[in-house]
Image (cartoon, rainbow, N blue to C red; front, side, top):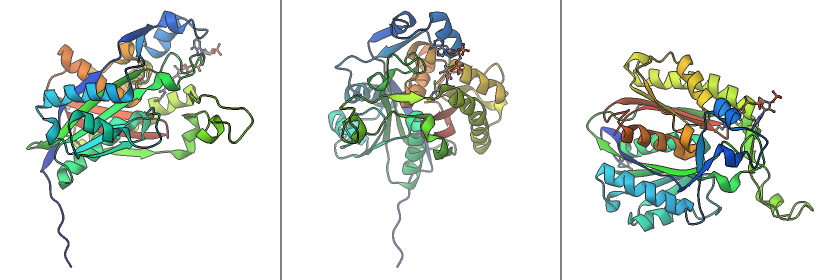
Length: 335
Ligand SMILES: CC(C)(COP(=O)(O)OP(=O)(O)OC[C@H]1O[C@@H](n2cnc3c(N)ncnc32)[C@H](O)[C@@H]1OP(=O)(O)O)[C@@H](O)C(=O)NCCC(=O)NCCS
């Protein structure tokens, strides 16, 4: 028996992006009240000048809805047209249900398929790859992808390797049908052998005191910064080069480069390894946002578009990498 199969649009594209940045700005001087460090060390080793930490009312849901509304407005897509909502987060504090379903309801994307993914700092690129496939196979027409984190909830403010890096925010994109190719092939993967390099300190049964005598305590994310730095700067440059190749875009043809905002020195190392020409505009949002994990790429894209540094229709290489370890990169056309 021949089953009917769905068919979708010839191509997909990002139709609009939007961000939500928490109100409270936390400068390096404040960070240095929690850890033994200095403004100069933080700026030179990470490129971070300040970051934003969410207030109580700036929940994962609230920040997501804010970012999504901006993305939908810019895309010219009504909430009722969104048929799929994908939320990438590692800081939604409910194990279940997914936050995507309540975000869809609050937005008015009534009845949309909705689910969360856990792909850490690669989450936006994982979601973009899924949305591209959904639109081209006809599983979806308009997909809302949101990267959102409240990393401040999961950060030990006295840990010198993470306290100055992690931050909060949300970034969203609407992906829908297009007459022209707007999302290149994804190059993605994982390396579970290196999972311990970035992880929650303990699983829930232990932090709740079930499995040991320590009693309930709050888990945070720990990271072995140096090996992660080397993996990101060297291995991820090769992945980024493969994503360019897969899209048939040469470094000279590229207009914009927006890697996950993990560390300015990682961005610089990738830029050099890829041999990108100086004319390529680079996302450097980390200076004022810190590392917002799944939110960092859409936030950085929004900054470049709003400032006029990058323009609609330009080619942009995005690459996300983080806890898992997981990674994904692709070339997109900016909305
Ligand atoms: C965290 C990170 C900025 C640390 O930078 P680094 O150059 O690797 O630093 P190291 O851990 O090797 O430490 C270098 C020195 O700085 C010191 N140091 C470490 N943290 C410090 C801090 N917060 N303030 C001041 N000094 C610090 C160390 O004690 C060490 O001193 P020593 O040379 O006297 O022994 C960097 O490793 C990084 O960005 N890693 C990847 C982050 C990332 O991408 N994470 C997530 C992927 S999503």
